[in-house]
Image (tube, rainbow, N blue to C red; front, side, top):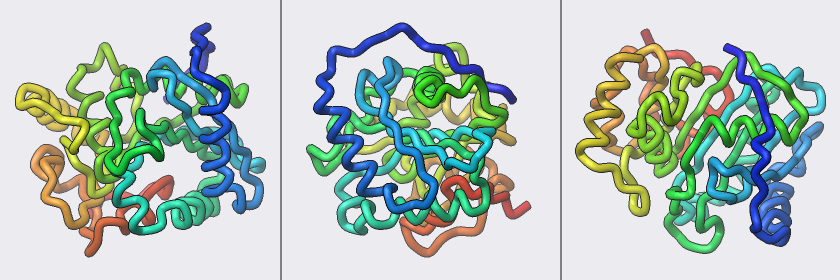
Length: 248
């Protein structure tokens, strides 16, 4: 499926200092990857918060992967800063054509539990990221969430197909993901919408289960699962950008 980019004409009043801090974090995480290009943009879809965009200089930019990380509390415990770069590098070794889009939470690096309530439009974030790179279109779009990042995906599903253009997503990947997290609660009514979407669009999903007892495991048919991991982090390190397939 082709995703077109377009400039929104929207400018944020956020200071440049915010973008510089995000760029510096991105260089720490990804700067050691051979061939990496690092950009940071702002998007109305992320409430003006920075969005890190990564492409490989040898890639053909055919795929876009929009990913939401988990709670910063746990990221710090496992040295996420040191691990996420090698994770992206391994993904590029298999698929250098993937552009990774990594939005930041409203309280990025400022609080232990990530607040993702700044996210309102996943499609807009992807479009703004493509525009930053001067890319007109991609052929495949994945969106994923690890741990608390799964609550961002849940909120997008709960808002409905018109608001979030969910049919634009070729695949939704859930890495030991939560439906509702500390700062990103999902109501019972929203859970019902999510469940109905999963039932109606089973082929869209890939679940990489870990140690959490998540409601995603009830919503997504088991035929769309991969092998269960024995810890919380393997689903992310093994799966981000790697095109894993369900067991059946």
